[in-house]
Length: 254
Image 1 (tube, rainbow, N blue to C red):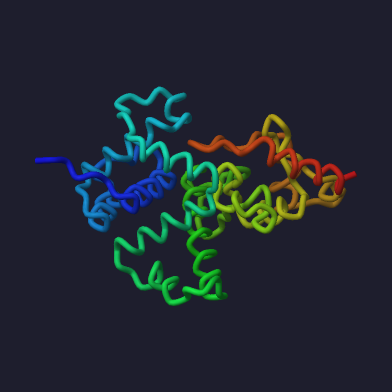
Image 2: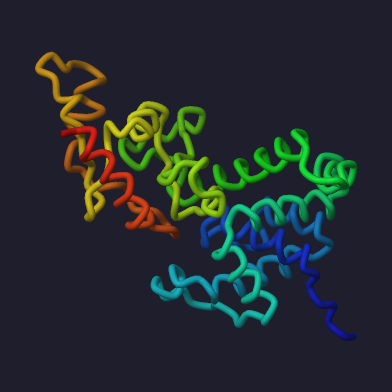
């Protein structure tokens, strides 16, 4: 029997999952893989194998010398390149593909109702889908803990953009443009009260270095100054993006 080729929608959904879970969970017993395989019409074994195919394209997995990686197809490589060229667009397309395959009403059908161009409803849908992808990818990349203080309560964690959402549309869903930070460190990072050095060490603004710093203020900032950012499992923070953030931090701190 001839092997049925993967459709673009099926591959988009597989890539979406790949960027949201660590390599060690890419097996057919993972409940996420089992549930997603039902949506895309493939077996858990087939989906797990496809994730292994995708991993063969990933420099992070090659660097770790993961054994058992399989070869990828031309379409796999094409979609990999598309994601890395425009994360925002492909995050949206992959979430939409999942909606189509699952026959959910909030996805492609929602867009089909507005054929004459973007509307507020369409924009809200796109933002919601892209933000959801970005959050899951970032929390997975940092194993659901703050990259500064290591807190693991997900309800306190933010997928923080290095280059702000409003400044670069293509990088809105780029995992290398994000950090997992607790709400306190996220707010400090967004206001350039903290940043990170070229070697990923925590920098603390002079505005936070007050003589009367006590309690959480001291523990969250002054006591952690110079500590290295927690190492992500796949996507390292983009040094160029951090340099842009650090330049404004230096200006505001002086």
